[in-house]
Image (cartoon, rainbow, N blue to C red):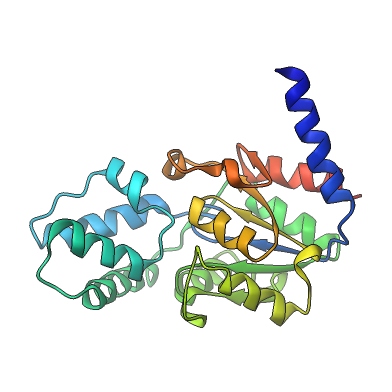
Length: 237
């Protein structure tokens, strides 16, 4: 077992050594910020008005990491709600904006140190989210991170959000970099699929809300963003 693990790490290291690293592209929710618990609570409050009880486990299994419009479609179909998905999605966006007008999502452990280290290395940094821009702006402004990031692309900027690769392809276009010059850091299966479909090496970081997701499709999987940072540093020098 140990030999197999060693061979896998060696193979991945060889992939990284061969790339000309110019940019790191971060997912937002669940990767940079600890927000999924809040998103669950907001969906729970909305659905309560429709007499639907959304359990935290259901949210983890079927909704975490899914863009709001798609979640709205899933929920309307699953619970036979007498409302069109677009209106439900608008309700979610409205309640999220209200929350963020008075609060800022907490940063995930080691995310600040990771951002600062890659910025100091002279790499271009981007936030690539399947959600809207309001949440990212709240994070960057609330934690004074604007100076570190060169681009933000969101699900609102493309026709199809994650797991479609469009949002990553747009980020690379705006940065002027190619897929073999970037590494993505994600926390959900949808996000990983999006990054891989865009041709990127993708590091997956675990969290409580994506524990049931298939993260094994990523290039490498880590317990937290600090581990991902160290692996990238050690294998791209």
